[in-house]
Image 1 (tube, rainbow, N blue to C red):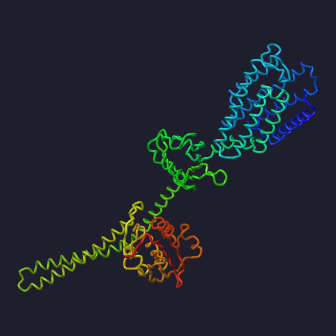
Image 2 (tube, helix red, strand yellow; image 1 turned 90 degrees about the horizontal axis):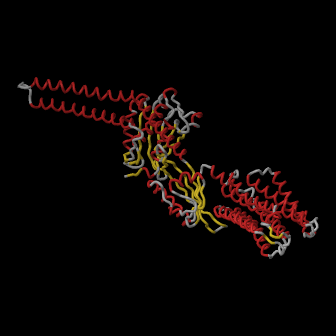
Image 3 (cartoon, helix red, strand yellow; image 1 turned 180 degrees about the vertical axis):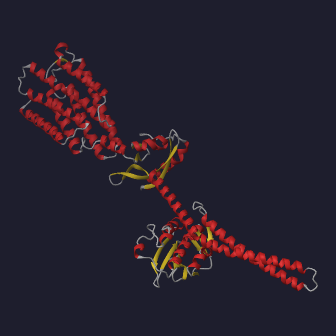
Length: 615
């Protein structure tokens, strides 16, 4: 029978279980894991109450003892509920599958066998509360084997979850949960073989040590019911970033759904498989796969984080999709120094890449529009520039025709000497030279305009002399300079030859835009626009200096940052903005401005040393 001290302990156990149930209910913990544990608590409470009731019955009343013992055998369901907890954690269930009901079939039959034992004696061949007197029937051993199988399976599931999870708290949860499952089983075995003399003591030890102490530590100390792999795995599977966890030997420990759906499928990566033994489904994916292995190996050898951009081509039913990922590989440590593996995070940056490409395309279109707009504004001046050589050619042709007529008429005339014919030929030669120079000038203008009208996408990253920039600028802006009564002066303090690596047409666009702005600012009074090249900290500084009206204060805040113009309807507002983009994209250069102490503005283009050299 149970002693008075044992009764007190059982009452304390009952109060503790009730307090546990009430506290969990007040926290509104109604997830599947909590519901299963409520059932366990209810069963243990009934079991405990039956043991308390046993204290008040006479030992000679075998009928009462048998009824109470039958009630305590409700604990037959505990191994199955324990297995359900382990499977819920392992599989991440939100609801128990219907087939789990079959797991309860054996304990239901066993409990029924206990209640009806006087009719068949298959569970107890001879009933007694003393293990030295009790004799078990054949069905008892079937139930005992089934209970051990359920508890063993539960322990295996929890251990697998703990091994897959790097968190130390998960491992401690598994340790105490496992001990809590093992202890009742060990006690039952000891009772069967006669080490523990009383079935009452068996129940008592099972409750206090197994269900309360070890499971209590797992629940309250390590938050078994609060920090659940189910919840964590659900969150990890729903995030868009993929992750891959490996140990030091390259064994795949874990991955989430985002990684499995992309890299797992394409590279054949599965859990519990060595990364080097995985086989990509598509031969075209091998390059990316081995690049991933190489970076992970570098992370292991260097023991430091590694980040790189990874691209992968995914096959769909209709086409192929290229996706971009930013991969961050970080070592994992146990404690402070022991490296136990690495975790690779895969952030999908496809949308960012596409947005950047679209932005670059838009910038290219804006550059092209600005170039064409600039040429459109120069059309009038270019026509005027072409008119002068055309008139010169026409005049030369007319003069040559007159000289030819004069030469033909003088043929056979005795008064015309050879010196006279030589004078005619010399004059014809002078006119042909003038025509040749006019044609060359027209050719230069046409070539310059054609180059500036070429597509921005046709990037020419070739060496060119900076003097060509000056010559083209003077040629394109000759009419604008004449109209504004401005002169253009170039001063080179660096050296006779400056060869810049880049696209000459883009640089011409920037310089002509700055000089044209300077001419517009000086249109009222005219003056000299100076372009000075010099070295500043080994970088090439190109200054465009004017003495115009300067930049208004309200415009200064917007220069280079947005499209703004001081030209009214005649300005596009994208010149300086695009000039900055061109310099940054094509020459890794910068542009800034300052007020000219003598009035006007100074724009400075700074080209880094790697983009030019001096001969």
